[in-house]
Length: 552
Image (cartoon, rainbow, N blue to C red):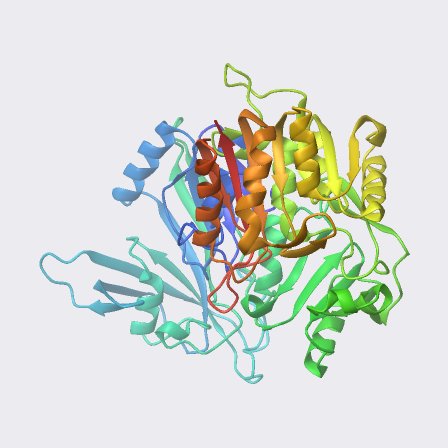
């Protein structure tokens, strides 16, 4: 269950979108929007259609069509203005004394929209505002979570209801500013700075596409909650997953600082010791998440000169975690350790890719392994190179694969076997191969072994006595070419890299060119960015790049 899901039937999907998430991806290599994330998540959502949109920083109800009938019906209802929408907004200005109607034409000017008097040929935009009375220091009932304005403890925010009778881009935001009460946090239109834009789509009423019955959905606003954590809570089910990123650098307002939740402890990472502000924030996060303890790890590029004890995270708050503790992810279990060096045993940014292996569903109309008639296959063979603690293999095995995991560390392969056992999977039914990936690709090719799925997720840099130095940007094409002889016709190649300085365009070009050079053809492709709890922004560009390719 996706926590933000409000309603679903054969025709409709209604979701409570968190602030900070686009309705759809703004570009081919940007982070997924809500629509993209949903459409590629479940086979039954593969035909989702966007009928309405909410701005990235606006939260609240959004309706998607699942069928052609729903698409036609909802499109007609919105066009004929038969859908009733209600928003709530906060402002630090007095607002209207009573109901106020604003009508104008909106004209785009760069990133902003300007309100102009109605004129012939211009599209009308109409919004009705109604002030909801509130007393100083008391939260009004429709919102329930109105706090004093940051930095202005004596100010009392005003809660206003907005009903747009048209659906123009930025309409409520522009009209509120025009009327003299810009939305709190909406600095683009003159609002006082705040942690988020305090605008929420709280209610929507429409006729069901099949029955024509009027249906209304509501979602309470939460303007007081931390929008960054509300986004995580909307997308991650804590009953299935208790390991995710809480703070992702500049995208979450903390440049150079990253914090993960790992079951009941926190892991902080940065290039230096914690600042006073970071230490205070870490303590607040620990209390809010009921964490038993918090660790800090200094990020360094000099791993080969750093011992395991020095590279390991150091306890800075509360109680130490057990030497080995277990986290949940999509219902699976994985063993982690804070005492094994630089890596704790699981890369959280690959969560959605592990789910794809677990479910056998890559994206809309893209199954992991298909039969000749296009159905989903049962058992299949999977080769996992640079396997680390074999988390990919564990998920694939649960999904029906016979896995072979290759890694340059015996310790990590043994760790991988532990992960198999944690999930009631017999490691003896799977292969664990110690050694150099390139060397084993040559050996397996000589044996004429074939795999329906091959996973390539190499480190950005590694050193092997057999193959020498591997640098992702320089050698990834060679890796792809070496793996392809082992991939069955119609098999799936997973190619991923966390090389931050390598652009997505260049990475995709390298992989596609390597496939073309050996005479193979890509017949299906899906590009997957990092998950939403690792938000991509201008201040914090994406680093994780993944291609799922069916190769003929």
